[in-house]
Length: 260
Image 1 (cartoon, rainbow, N blue to C red):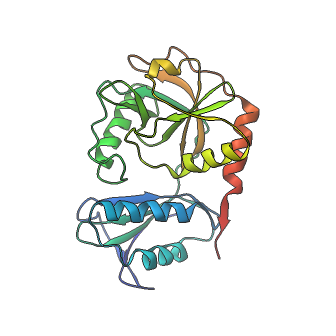
Image 2: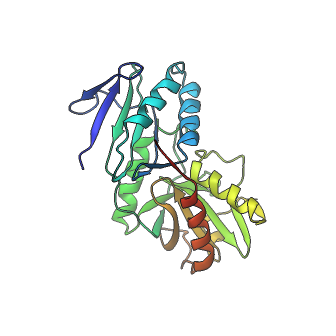
């Protein structure tokens, strides 16, 4: 499978980009496409539109662009496409093979506070977040855990964070500056439908010591945290509840929509 970058030239028209993009994208969104099935494409489109509007980019053509992007996706294989809005108003579809799925993860607690400029928009801080993930890997982890100046947990560099205290699903407090995660929103809806209490919390990394912690995103779905690294991190990770994990993974899988 070969990656392709397609520049949108208007309704129904694409031109293939060759070489690296001339500048970094300002707003992006990515989603998983497997065998022609796309999970939560409408929600990703809504977040992409909101990000463009927040940064003052034109939005009039986004509906047509997203419709054409969906139609251009491969019908077979496992892909992780990305839609991009650039400062020069170009709209690009990057069709990328999906990396191997991960079923668990290890987090490194970043020693400095979250330094993102626009945490609520996916795009402006991609380079910063990629650098944090690289540092996490050098410490034997998969991603970095972000905390605020007050030491309160926000999210991982490339995933939202949820955790369980007994039968309660806990989420970061609503006033914390985090990316509006499509996957986390889907899981909160599934939890409400199942009658699970949802509790907003503010806690330091050490406060997660007894909790079953999940990172969630479009690429990997749910990954329980099975190891911690870094100063202030929990000493050990809680053992995931296998039945609960399977249930919510099946809820995510059932939400994939058939394309064409």
